[in-house]
Length: 304
Image 1: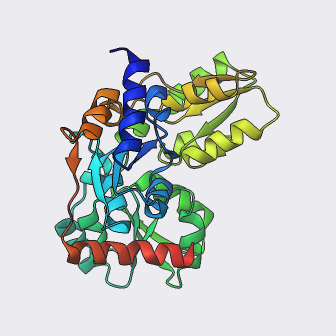
Image 2: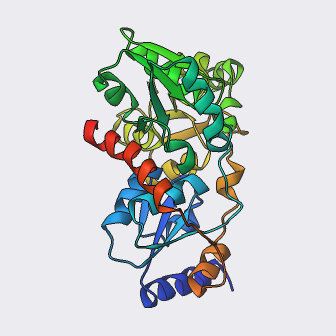
């Protein structure tokens, strides 16, 4: 089978078996083409909660599939490739943060959505990269323990100087690969290009950006801008997607090494096998964990 044949079989099977396919925007184009919804992780889980489909396949990483299950417990949720994890989500666990909370009992614990469902159970509120500033601003407490991404936390804290932030050493290894030397090189090669970066990048990279924001925020900025050249400081698949969607503009990766191998592990064949019922990793959460994790997300929605 070639790519077209596999895509057509996936589309046939998902209609036949009442399946909804979610694809994070870091996935390759051939996967996005068979998805019912594409975008950032939390937005995908919200779309999944609205669909009537009985089965949901997440083409992303494990914490994203867990979020789908948290919001849609009645649905069968499959992670297309069970090995697709998220190093940032897995670097801090419940026991570690429980100990940290003892040292900062008067701090509100803010968890980036890129965390496991188990860790969310002991956090006060969730945020996404696009909502973090707004929500942290609305929290009544002026002391915030922000986990796990210290780079995103630093970016948020600089926009809310009236609050005290405690950050731990954690973050996205993919975005952390990019440094100021990459910025200097890219700007020298493309002096007329705007630099658009994700706030998971190091502070010295974010400080040089013309725009910092979520993945969908970066794409929206590039599409709506009257500028014609952009350096993209996030997962390199976004360069590909923007090149396809805006053929009249030019897009350059900030670094050739900004590749999320966990995202890239998912293939069309993985999705096909899920649709056939012979692949994927089903996500199951005990009800106590699901409810406690959902409380963290509900507070985000309440303030969001």
